[in-house]
Length: 108
Image 1 (tube, rainbow, N blue to C red):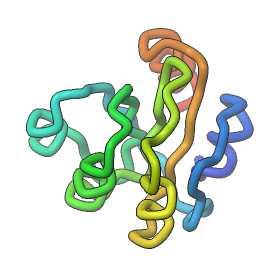
Image 2 (image 1 turned 180 degrees about the horizontal axis):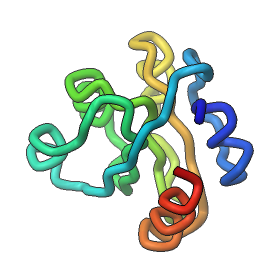
Image 3 (image 1 turned 120 degrees about the vertical axis):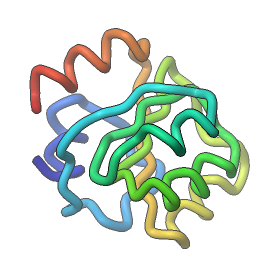
Image 4 (image 1 turned 60 degrees about the vertical axis):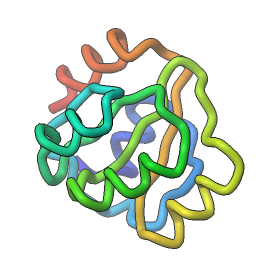
């Protein structure tokens, strides 16, 4: 599944979508950045409520296919632009991490 097809299937908002053809192979949910760095896998969709610029750095380090801000969280000022500059797909959803994780799992 691509990030674009995931966006459409889950009705996600695109804050930054520089690589919408990127493959999504799994998912990871977490907010403790050091924990995510050690456990998220390349090509995962990372679900979080963190919205600051550090998510872009972690997404780059872990090579996740996208970051999904859950629970209606929007990126802090400048984060969407930073994500676009770094090639990070940044999406959003009003759904809880729990509910969105369940829907993601069913798709994959």
